Length: 114
Length: 117
Image (cartoon, rainbow over all chains, first blue to last red; front, side, top):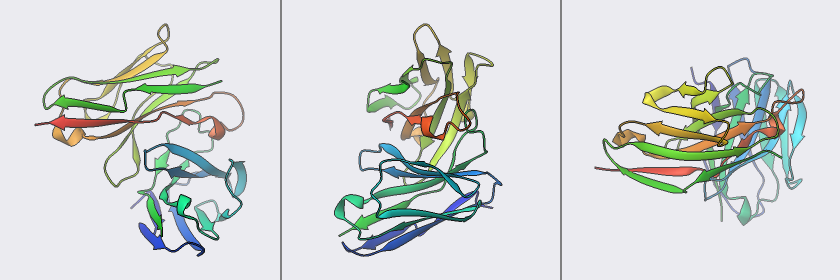
């Protein structure tokens, strides 16, 4: 009955490879997000989708491409991985009006690029 | 512009002692404020939220926070710390305007809480 699930939990890969992280939520929320957490625990929003439409695209290299096949899924594809991409990536969701509704987070995907 | 500042990247208290984690915000409009907790190797979970209904907000695990407009603060407290409270805590402010405030969800830099036996 996991609300927001993301896979894989750990991802170790070499520079230059292409990888994907999958995210699914069963809460019926309209909005989904990808966040990046660096080694100092700082959280930065990367993308936000509302009903499969991109509504936020922060300053993220275009090697990162989100894909939302339906409103319950938001996947993250990363091309040509670099050392600096190593981080923990969190998927989250919220009801359409996120102003006073909390975010529901997945447990994160720890990406290590060697 | 909206911002949130957490004072102290690391706080250490003894088990049974008072926990106080500080958060100050800056907002030109009435804010919505949240505290989240992140246990090791997990995602963030909501502790409590302020949405203008009451200035003293009670959350899970005996945590509470008080909204003080005059001080632009939203400090998190717990009367008696438990070992299980060791985690990273994030203060969050959200903007109230616009169709979607997703771009206005601003996280503080986090405070790591350690509990001494």
